[in-house]
Length: 162
Image 1 (cartoon, rainbow, N blue to C red):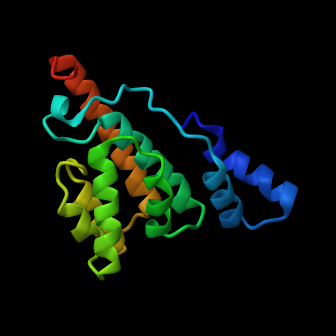
Image 2 (cartoon, rainbow, N blue to C red; image 1 turned 30 degrees about the horizontal axis):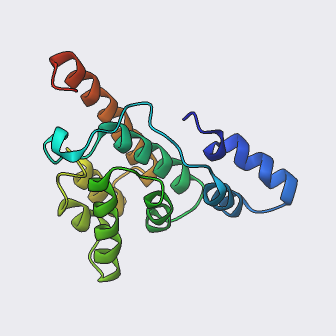
């Protein structure tokens, strides 16, 4: 990830400087980070057939991995990341997932209700992570970022990417 505010080394440096625990330092850096921009242009939903932007999904997954690895819960991480997205489909989906979770719907179930935002196997990976299926949320997020990068490259090669 290119944004140094979210790196483990920046978090460790803040810990050394302030004496804060890792999760507190990571949360403080996340809260104070400047708005990040995606290396991939964000196109309006109408130009993408109502689907979320791959660039935004990749950034989302990378940030979620860093936040959850730092000790934040998936929902705390989700709430932190929602303020950084510019994609209207993802922004609405994030707010929807947070609201459904408050109604005691599992995160994976809420995510599955927004297939245009969370493409591919994302809901299934979240369900497996929630059930302790052998890998952490951070690992699931890194896997999804890698998958989304591959899918973006495939779209570019096929000429579907604008």
